[in-house]
Length: 196
Image (spheres, one colour):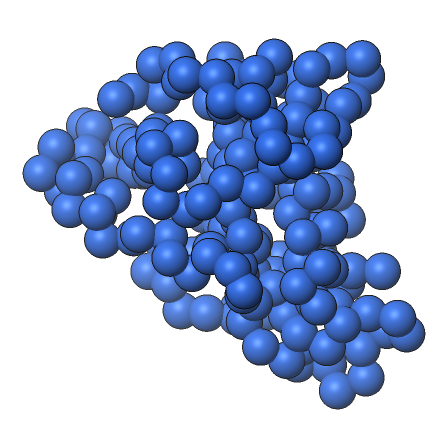
């Protein structure tokens, strides 16, 4: 499946979030649902192909793609310590954002009223045809709300240097570049945000 293959609309089962009069909604989705699997494949294909095209001049080897998609099941986005959110535009699933608890924040004195845990933002992605309509900010904001619900007072993420659009989005939404919080092979930039 490519990132432009339409996915079957699924009616939201949770409150609908709308912005600017459009038909955006964001709701939790099981990490192993067919919708989640299709969006994970689209996400991984896009970021992997982008890396290989930039560094080696070709798209991802199909066998490698299948191995890597299968290797990351997303089970860390399951309750009670995680959640996967799916964004729908006019009823069609077009994007994801996930949150998982990592443990206590490194700050021994978290801001008043915040949780003491740190959450990690994962799998922030919109299909190409859904971009430019405000959905990315809506997804990240919904993920921050989910992190607060899980008890997090801080949220962190990592991204690559070539994903300049993602870095610009995070900066616009109040994330600040920080010291590394992991040693993932492709992580080149780390961000953090205190959740008020």
